[in-house]
Image (cartoon, rainbow, N blue to C red; front, side, top):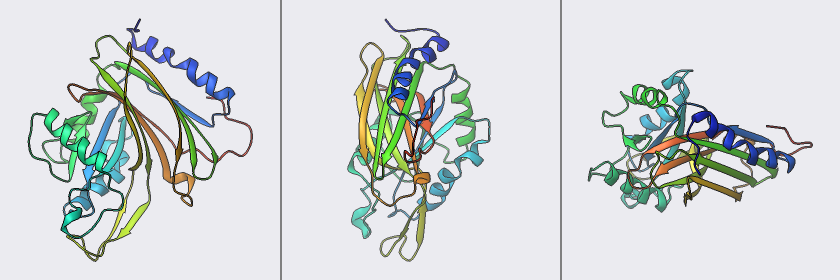
Length: 267
């Protein structure tokens, strides 16, 4: 049976995290009573108009304000690679997701840079980003997410996520993303030839969609990441999205976890 009240939703995810703490979880997070906004930016190093949008996402906290609740993800697409520069952070799955979101918004044109807030296209460019995020934040939560991770060795994150939704949520799925900030590229060809581009919140590992059953889902994964990147560059995000409408009903981010060096931190 699904839970109804937001308070019950939050409580419903406490048990998985308590169990993970006993296994040595180093950091954890719970979603709150209001809806957090997932801010997705579809971008490419082959797109000359993308760097300003990349900078906006990199300064998302300042753009939204301290009291806003937004989770930023940069998803690099590969459909501009043909014009002369192969984006090293691009993945085909992000190009496919971009196409799906455009269709879910009843549009046909796929372009970059392209912002979506909780699955809804930001049609006025970046000018309404703060307003749209705050509009999402004004809604009571319809789902609760618990996210926990430990970093036992370099290049490995062990991640667990649990979700519970209310009965008002349609068929939905859980997604988990491991993102990296502080990336840079010296672009040699294409529209940005000769420029050094910097990127934050770039999704490197993508899990999902994981279909919910009776409004619940749970996932435990070991995520292998490139060696040598400082711990502070990594961040985790999880979100729940309706699969028919594209509407994101809740999102959550988890600050970088340090590599294990002793006793676990209790959530």
